[in-house]
Amino acid sequence: MGSGRLTPADQRCPQPRRPQHSTALSSTNPEKHITELSVHPTLAIFPTLAPDEMRALTENIRTHGLLHPIVRDASGQILDGRSRLTACRKAGVESVFTIYDGAAAPHDYVLAVNLHRRTLSRGQAAMIAVKACSDGEQQERSASERTARSIAERSALSLGRVGQALTVARFAEDLVERVIAGTLGLDEALKTAQHRKAEAAARDEVTQLEKLREEDPELADQVDTDKLSLVAALVQRQHVTTEQARQQQVSTDLLCQLLPALAELQGGEAFSKYDPERAQPERRVTGEIISRAQTALVECAAVWKERDLP
Image (cartoon, rainbow, N blue to C red; front, side):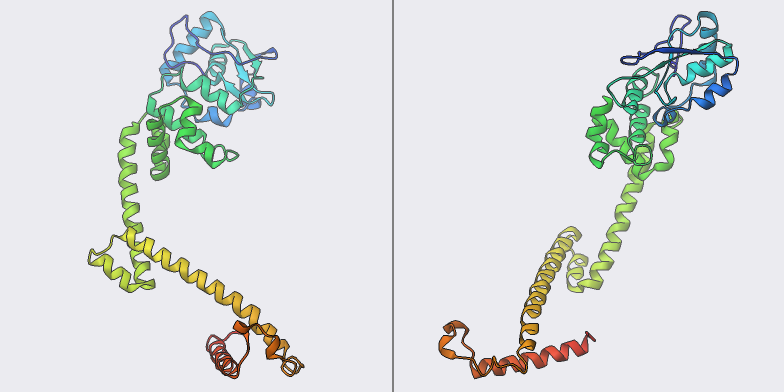
């Protein structure tokens, strides 16, 4: 991609690391070349030159020729020089290509050579970096590689600006392309995103409070009367829910252990062979324990019937 503002002697373009070779392609059929050499997805995020900038670049190349080759990868995707390729077509100048063979991933190379040399605002650069590292653009990247700090470090941009761009991408996705194009500043888009974020948080609070009323009306009443904040009530509710789940697991494990074993004793000789002298004192079976066990089994059967369990 060419720089935003060009002087006749200026076609700035950092060269790719360790180029294998340069290949000159005839520009007699430039449209065919553009079709065959697709643009890398990360490069496609960057805005194209404005018409007056493209005219300046075209005249520059017509006068001085192509000073810096167009960079592509081995598969034919353009990594840098999309605007120079278009300008060559318009100027009728032969397009010269070089194959990138650097250590960095093509995605990172595209960002490195375009974010900091184009006439992009800091907001545009941050928004481009965020979009380039988003799920839609780079699905192979892990969640940790899409955090504000990771994106800022990889793109050498301000952590604050990247964080703002992430907020816009999450809560005002419809404004992302306008920020990238430069028709809307990141600060203005951020105001809209923060407003939508606050609205979403308010809706979440209403939903959470309604759910709390269904599950624990007494706790919800404490929120309504300002005795507890919603956050504190939800934490307390979570503790209660966790304890209930623990008790359910303990009860389930106990019944699964005892009842099948007891059922196996029916019709056997275990009862007649019971010897109290051989039993551990604290686990000795008495008539009272048997009576309580019978009561427990009756209660268990009643609960099973009420719950319609098999």
